[in-house]
Length: 382
Image (cartoon, rainbow, N blue to C red; front, side, top):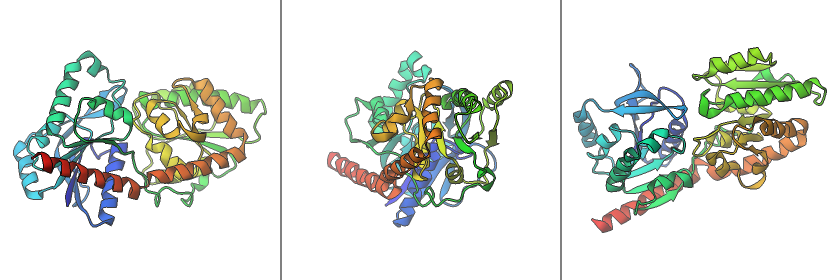
């Protein structure tokens, strides 16, 4: 079996879909399964190694408070030639972009599988121009042999699809994210570290965490905590200047903007944190950052968007969800953990057990089983 993992998101920047594809390919390699990644080019030059094929061009597109991609293959002949050369048994599309997705799909003679990661609940263009989504659905229904959603809400887009559908969540590399990860020494000074790790854009909601931190800092000043607090912000994005201005205007102490520090692994930031907080207000399909923090053994506080509820909405995790944009309740949830070191440890242990459900060996087993199911169904119908 030879598998082509197709990304419609540039690999130039970090992202959840990129991490998912790389994790799945790594697990395939361990099993001796041949695979290559197909990804559009954003910059020149780009080189991700012999297992990554650069195909088409990705143009950045801002939509629904986040960054998306508009992808196109200016040389359709190169798409035909690539597919003839590689002879993939399976093309596994991750999300879908117009027109490059259709350009590949219409030329494919492989088993075509789609994993839909996107949460389009806040994408206004689809509500204003619903025919765009209708065209997308029709093309997918005609050509795709099976659809995976990382969350049940992803499959709602394809409610009329009659082929095989399944929910298979994101995976995590437990060799990379675990409690043995080394910590960042400069932050081990006795302060309680709250961590934000993500793109600084509207959807990720950092401003609401800053407002919650302002409340917490005032309480610390009134003597309710023995330790000072620190908020570590890791990431870049279009709202970074606004967030830094909020910190200056409100004279917040111990807020550190690390930027997008590629020299320090994300896992080390999680390990250094006492609490991980993700205040994303909408548009999350799953919440891989939550699982990463949990795998390292850290308690998690977050807004209860539809994706995060899948991860934290059951068991002990639901106690540390707040309504999106409700920064006052977010502050209260954080305060509970700041005051109680024993509870932080307890929630960390709960998170480690939950994270094991998402190990890549388990996720890859489910994906490969779905390939077989779809191939069997396709063979019968042909």
